[in-house]
Length: 418
Image 1: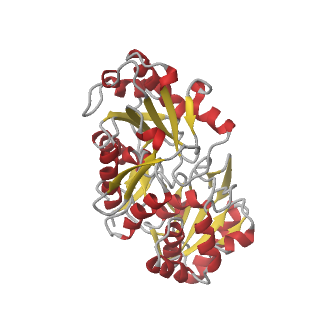
Image 2 (image 1 turned 30 degrees about the vertical axis):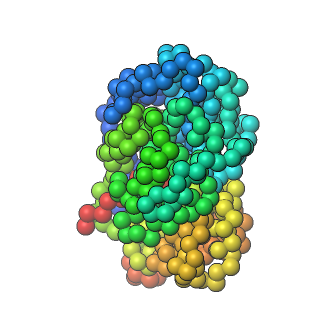
Image 3 (image 1 turned 120 degrees about the horizontal axis):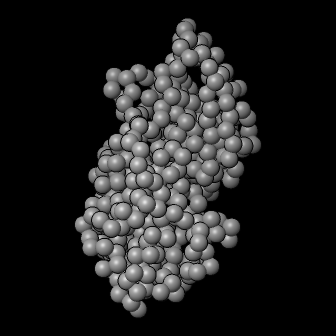
């Protein structure tokens, strides 16, 4: 039977005997209803834990709206206009609104990317895009994370954050406070917060991950007045939106995400074929790692994960690439993290931990030697990688391997119920 997965802006098909496939894991079915702007406007009209946005701001106040960069699938061009309508209803002028791109440790956006992000508001709003004039310090969290935030964000009278909620491999879920920390913070703050990922409670699907709680403590110190967090279906349409308090609304969106993407599975797989679903979530290996992390749950020890993603921008982070290049084995990478936690290195170690359990075949647009440098086996086409994985497992097991296919691996979380 023929199956398809996304890679970059294209799809690739591959053949497998249907009887060998445990499941093609998709989001759970949901009742049809409104999507897009209608969903966002409905959440703005009934916020959770706060008054309406139009009641929180006054004419003459400055407003900072924080949104995601292009490595996130948030459709800002869909979410921003309803938010701006709320601000206009309060008498806020466009010239009093700053749109801050939550870059975190990512690169600034190009003009074409800003045009795509902002939609009808491109050219109408001031933009903060990696060109801040400084930082404001708010102290440290109880964990010791320094709370330093871009001055322009900190000095706004009102802060509003836009985000999409999906599973995050150590923060539990994305969204909420992550727009400010790490989105508008410093490398040192991100590194301190992310060091909590070694805590066993820091895992995908935990709303109270210690990483998340540290972010929320930092965000409370800074002040975040209102959020709009959306859930996307597999076609990246907005199917749910929660607005209001940055904790309560984010948790509400998390619960909806679980209903949509928490997928029960009753059999472990010998081979897992996993994709992020294509662009923009597979721009580099640093981002593609999220799909790999979800695929680690259902694969058996000694199995193979066929990881599919364009990685058109390569590895995506300098420390990540350096740690992989300098190591001789995956164990070296894990040991490096235990000696010296570094942002970027943490993702290298997360990948290496999986490679200690199973083989990873990477189907990408990267140079083969660059893939091998990451202790993965390079392939140019999905079918070739799947055929090699099946043959490898046949030899190891003496039977036909059992296969799980995850076309949207960064979103769907296998919940093992064996």
